[in-house]
Amino acid sequence: MDEVDEEREVAWLAMPEKAPVVGESGEEIGRVEELLGDKEDDIFHGIVLKLARGGHKVEVRADRIPKITTRRVYTDLAADELERLPPIK
Image 1 (cartoon, rainbow, N blue to C red):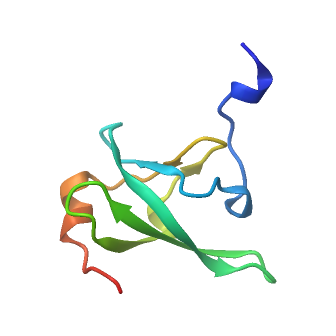
Image 2: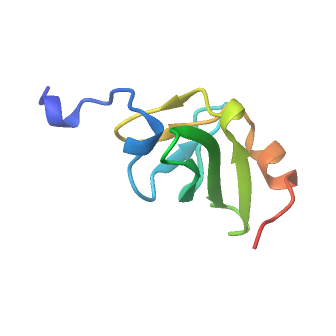
């Protein structure tokens, strides 16, 4: 396996742009629209997630994101929990 293809954990600032977001069941539930945080102080607040179903955007707090890799973002929330989050503009 080529090292470039290897999925490895990265810091929030190295999150791939428009990374797919995987829910607790392992299915892709949407894509990262933007990072929320303070780059100067290296404080990660969360992400804005554009849901695959419905297409609206929700905020996923950093404490619900156990892992960020070179390929995707993992959340411990289920798709139906995410769909119940209040949409953000």
